[in-house]
Image 1: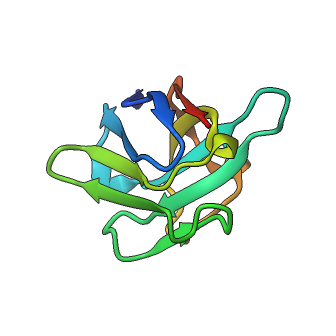
Image 2: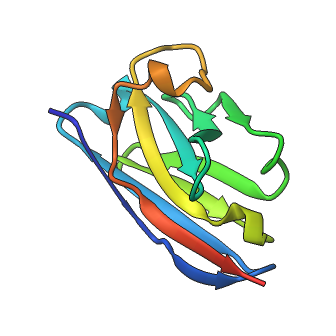
Length: 124
């Protein structure tokens, strides 16, 4: 079974930076495209970023483009989300997810495995 464990969330001031990590275990990490999603209180889950197995193909939601960076270290079975210039509207529970699809996807329904999430709260 694949397990995903996120870390790195917390309380940050607007304009600051925070980096989230997600460690995968259970299957070869390079099998999977990895994604980050977020869900704010009272809102639907939304796509944040995705990265293919090699790290060459990357996709971002428009709302985070230019501020967030997704990356992966296949030797450490870890995917990262570096969040710069955070805004109060970035406050959400952030979850990483894995899919065996080769082409990048922003659809949560196409991800097979999910972590439990880590909360990020941005104060103004």
